[in-house]
Image 1 (cartoon, rainbow, N blue to C red):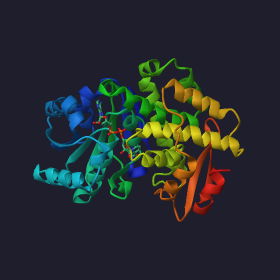
Image 2: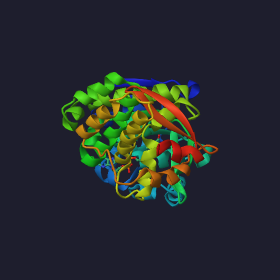
Image 3: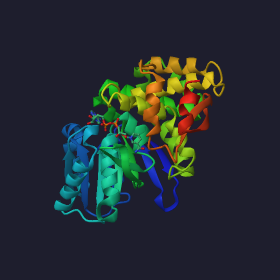
Image 4: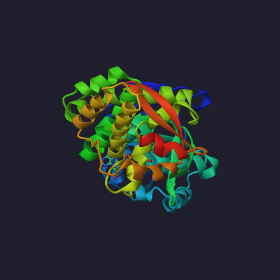
Length: 354
Ligand SMILES: NC(=O)c1ccc[n+]([C@@H]2O[C@H](COP(=O)([O-])OP(=O)(O)OC[C@H]3O[C@@H](n4cnc5c(N)ncnc54)[C@H](O)[C@@H]3O)[C@@H](O)[C@H]2O)c1
């Protein structure tokens, strides 16, 4: 069993990672939650696979659980769903001092976490992430949000869970494409922070052999994320390095209206393209793009798309991370180290198309 602690003073919490831990979830929750009522918020896919198991497990630990289920998919991470989730929580008799469990991928974690942060002016919640992306990234760090018609994640808050319980066994039912997409975020951690971890992933034979060691891999990712979040909980500085590949990646996702690529696939293209660019601009050590290409190919992730950079620039200018006309581009100086370059909106074209 791997246990990590995120140190954020009174908002500190533990992350438990273990194969099969899901079957003992009630026992872990009882370490800190002594009341009876729990509301589980999940999506239709996760519910049909694991909903009953979770409820039974909570009942066996003496809890009185209820369940709120919404339709799976990013298109439902919106205010309509949120309103329904609020209403169902209230109707099920859940009060402010009770507990909410966000049980699912990043969509559930973000929406249910945002519901927890706002309903009754905030109630305690825990994360039980069920996709690789959620297990290595979105369930840790307290960013919660919903999408609006004007863009993704535009309304949200920073709201830390009380505990994160990660069971890699749950990934067995996940679509292989989703697992590969999660690997793009895993690779990102190695690229921005840990050369040794990057090489470890590079030396793996294929996805299958990485999945055999997935507990260890998830732990390393959570450790890196924890270190970054502890320094910069509110995303005012260091946390921006987690956006390596994301500025371009988000633009690619948006260009195709979120239909062609998963988030991880778009980030994969973004990481490769920004590394090529970094080499051209003399920021990134020559040869690093070759390594990025090799590792992404190993995990069968895309590295290129025919869309031209010029078309992406307009989209990047409207990125929500564009603060007062300045965008931060995260370049690798070498594998394991990053360099942040601030580029003014009007300069983006000149700099990137050089
Ligand atoms: N808060 C953060 O820090 C943060 C970071 C990165 C991404 N995100 C957000 O995460 C979201 C993407 O998350 P995601 O990739 O997990 O997508 P997702 O939650 O939509 O899950 C992908 C699909 O897998 C299904 N699923 C989930 N677990 C399963 C399991 N164990 N077995 C079978 N099917 C399962 C889901 O129902 C869904 O259809 C985006 O909305 C993104 O904005 C948030």
